[in-house]
Every structure is written in C-alpha cells, then in structure tokens.
Length: 205
Image (cartoon, rainbow, N blue to C red; front, side):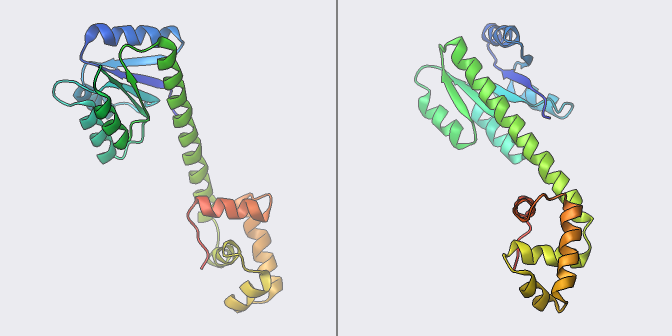
C-alpha cells in the first residue's frame, strides 16, 4: 500500500502553512517544502509519496520544472498544481507534463481536499496494480520452460490440440502442463490466467 503523505511545495510560507493546516485538519499526513529543490533533495530519503500539491510559479525550480524532473526520474507521483490568476496557460502546460489537476487561487477548501483525495486514490490504485504485477511475475518465474510454452499458446487463443501440434507433444500432455500452470499461477479460470499473463506482458505468438 502506498503511503498517503501529501507533500505541499510553495515558497510562500503563509500559504504553505495554511495548506498544511487544512490538510492535517482533514486527517491527512502532510510534509511541507519551501521549494521544489528542497522536495527533490528530501525525496531520496523517503518513499512517502501519496501526492504532491505544488505552486506552479516559484523562484528557482518552477512547478513545470519539477514535473519534468519527476518524469526524468520515472517517479509517477500524482501532482496537483496551484496557479495564480491568469496562469491557466501555464496550468495547461503542467497537465501536459503529467499534472493530474490544477487549482486557481483563491480556491475553495473542499475543492482542494476533493482533488487531493482523488490523487491519493489514484496513487493507491497504481500501487495495488504494481503489487499485483509483481506477484504475477513471481509466479511466472516458477513455471518450467514447457509450461511457459503452453501458457503462450493459451494466451494466443489456441486450443489444446493446436498447442500440442505446435510443441510436438500429445494433447493429454498439454492438459497436464495446463493444469500445472493453472495451479502455479493460482488462476481460477482460463480467463483469469489470460488476464494475469497480459498484465505481466506475456503475449502469445
């Protein structure tokens, strides 16, 4: 499960502390940063990445620069950018670089909270999918080469007889391999097995 820490990044101390107070009052775990550079420097020491709320206009590294850097580092944390009046074009640019939402100042507290909760839910969903893929890959690694061959045939939509012909073995032997790999993959049905194979990137020929 991903951490649900919200990282607030703003060079305006008063606004930053106001956001921190609002989010903590809503029961969320919050860490504040005076700059994007400060956030990135502390990033290496923590994996507490629920979501980020960042001002888009900041001295030094801007919100856009931060999004670019996160993309370079392959860190898929949801980022909500906060913009001043007239900064909508900048906010649109931020969304092109991966921001999940933008809020114009002044914004309603409930609008911010709804955006943060949506970002956290998105992050939790991604973490769940990552965990599922990792589990599937572990099970795949336990398959024998022949079981992988049979799996490839099944994912390609081939019947047992076709798989047997392609591999030069009997249909009965294919059934045995199929039963074994269903067991090893903990698949409840053929469709479940195919779904897992696709999640892990296993494609039939």
